[in-house]
Length: 145
Image 1 (cartoon, rainbow, N blue to C red):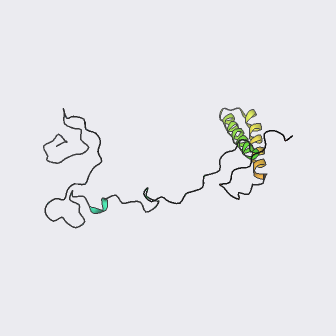
Image 2 (cartoon, rainbow, N blue to C red):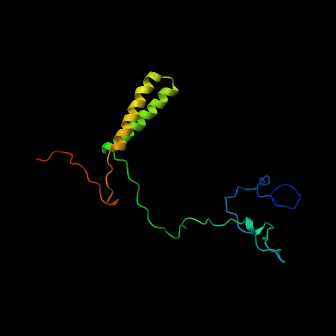
Image 3 (cartoon, one colour):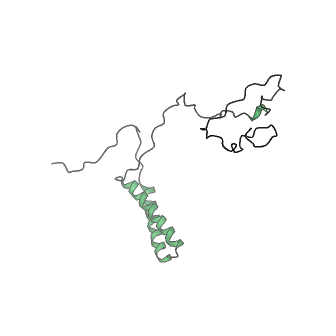
């Protein structure tokens, strides 16, 4: 009995009795069936049947691998559109911090810069994504001879 009382009930959340050796953690296992008939809708431990955890109705189980998803696009620091979007975010956050610290004279030009960068990124034509698994084209690092 782990509850420390003589009530005859076992409390799984009670501390172990004094002097008990440490035991490694083990998952709970279902109790063996008790002798005698059980009322319908009841488990042998007396808890209602609907309290059993049910598997979720969504997703794939680990033993059943699902379809492979394509990898999301990576950030390319050499891409001008990515660089401009990053500058828009950084100047916007800097303007927000300047407002929070009361530096309105600095926040106004930073916010104008963030808006200008954001509009520039939005006006940039998108590249058509023909095949997401094809290697990206890279610009030559040195001029041809």
